[in-house]
Image (cartoon, rainbow, N blue to C red):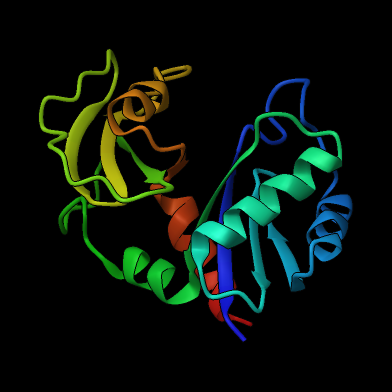
Length: 177
C-alpha cells in the first residue's frame, strides 16, 4: 500500500484552523487513510492510502479537512520515497549553515520556470527543483518574511514552507514506520 507524507499549509497557525493531533488523525481516517501518525504540531502527517496519484490524495485530504471545519488548508503530498530523496539531498551544500536558517518551500505541482530572480526581503534564494524552493535567512530574525505567497503567484501552485531540519527529521520519523 502506498505510503505518504503530507505537509499542510495554514494549520495550527495563529488562532484559526487549530486542531489537536488526535482529531487530525481522525479526519485522515475518515477519508480512508490508514496508519496515520502526526509529527510535531505543524501539519506534518504520515499515512497510507490505496490511491497512487498524489494529486488525488491531496484533494481527498483537503476535502476531509474542509468538512471538519478547517478553511483554506492546502495539502502538499509526497510519497515516502520522494521525501527520503529530498531529505538525503544537499540543497544547501555541505557546510553547516552557521548563522543561517534554512527553509524549503514545497510546491504541490511541479514548476519548471526560473526562480533565480526570486525576491524576498529577508530570504536568499539558494536553489530549486521542480517541486521545492530552497532559501536561507539570517538566524535571529524575529519572523522572516515568508515568500510562500510570491512563490504561489509565480507558480500557480499551492505551497507551504518548513525549516529544513523539520523536513529531515520528518523523513526520519516516517522511515521508522
